[in-house]
Image (cartoon, rainbow, N blue to C red; front, side):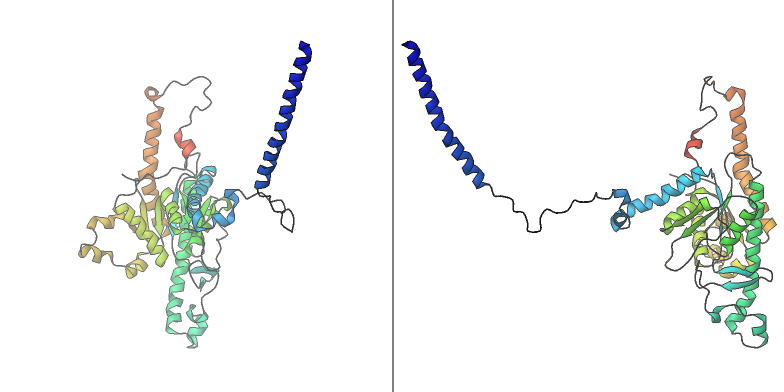
Length: 375
């Protein structure tokens, strides 16, 4: 009797639970109906997306104004990595006109270019007159003047070439694991080509720092391929000219040459270079017609001692002797003295027997030797 009552009670409880379930189900269905259904467009499911480009491979971004900082930093780090790889310790920079290049070196005939670094010749009425044109009275006054200047510019081309040869031959004899006083130019034609050519003919490495211009131009063929650079930003190119240079040779040139020369002289004048820079101005006859520095001294615009920031030279041998003297006194003598001091027994430090980095110093990892900015 008791068992039957328990069975009836269990059945009543199941019946009550069964009556509750439909109510819960109906609530779930109502909630589902309240949620809006996704509408599939009539053209079906969209195609699979391609992977987005990596940020550093996104050329649209890198070439945009937002990518400018990355471009600037790249023009510092990429040359730095190459200078380290090529073991370049320091340089001697040659500046000069890019508007002339040798056309027939045998008779020193020259062709005037349309613009600095351009591959296109200037108009015929701006070209130096040929001897037959002068004799026939067909040359303009400008052409006659440029014919005279062409002979002089041909001389400067050959002088820059010879000086670069002398400097490179000497630099190759300096005992060093790194390349010293490497001839460097702006990478274009004219005096720049002559400097790279002389170093190339002497069997040395030579650097060309070209600049991207809005007209057709190309680097000269004498640059060491692994040291051929092209910059977008003028100020980054200027930085690398000054950063590694231990000497500067300024041949006759125009606005660009004047800009580079006075920038280096200003850095030296204001003591912003933490190194001694030998500055040679080649061809006093040309330069003393272009500017009168004595007038700046007389008017108090510069100090008389500022004239001592540079020296004049007029032959390749004279220029080489001045360069060799300055580079030896300012760097090689001091380096030899420092090396001798380190080699003294009392200055030697005990090294572990199996020190794999023995003989290495921080400069071996951070080379090339970079100039510090004065504080």
